[in-house]
Image 1 (cartoon, chains in turn orange, cyan):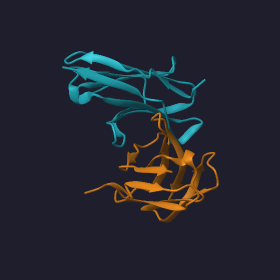
Image 2: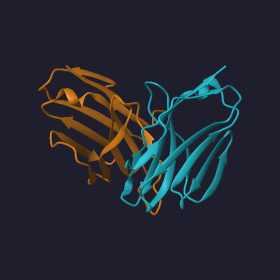
Image 3: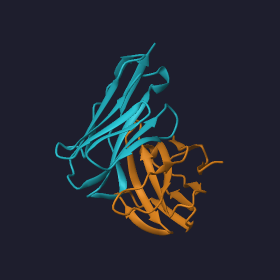
Image 4: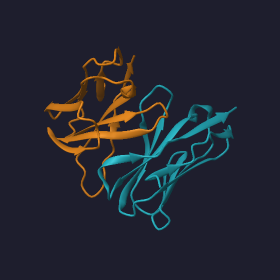
Amino acid sequence: DTAVSQTPKYLVTQMGNDKSIKCEQNLGHDTMYWYKQDSKKFLKIMFSYNNKELIINETVPNRFSPKSPDKAHLNLHINSLELGDSAVYFCASSPPTTVYQETQYFGPGTRLLVL
Amino acid sequence: QKEVEQNSGPLSVPEGAIASLNCTYSDRGSQSFFWYRQYSGKSPELIMFIYSNGDKEDGRFTAQLNKASQYVSLLIRDSQPSDSATYLCAVSGGTSYGKLTFGQGTILTVHP
């Protein structure tokens, strides 16, 4: 059983296009995340949602808009794609943070290439 | 100063040796510390987490945390070629509350 799934796995598109990436988790977690991993493999958080509410929004261009229709889904829409958006985007989920951060489980990633 | 810093490597060890991976962090308020392994083209997978000072062992893996020195390490005993991967250190808590802040990763190669 897939715990955290993402679609599509690969996405090749032209500059200026708008695209969406979908994420679903069946772990029953309340918290979901989007991370971006650049070409140097540096993994950085973009957004975090807890039970459909945005709780973390790092300094991400407003061309990126997350949306959580329910606590099992977190989608990422990107407008006006730029060359620099090429990266691997990982979705993750975890139980809510208390004193300690709970383990985050990552999806397989979506490899985005902007031409 | 980077928030989480790792030796980028690559670190090369012979099969059967101990691989030692190091990580330092800048935020003294950090509470939770994680080691993830990432194979090429795959997603990060958790190896270990540690919250308290000292050592935590799980099979061939030992995580060590020293909050006074702001230092966390991962030892891999009896290294195997299948351990060859990028190892990511991540911290949470303090200014990273509710999220993971990752280091840049250390590439480990275990050669037969």
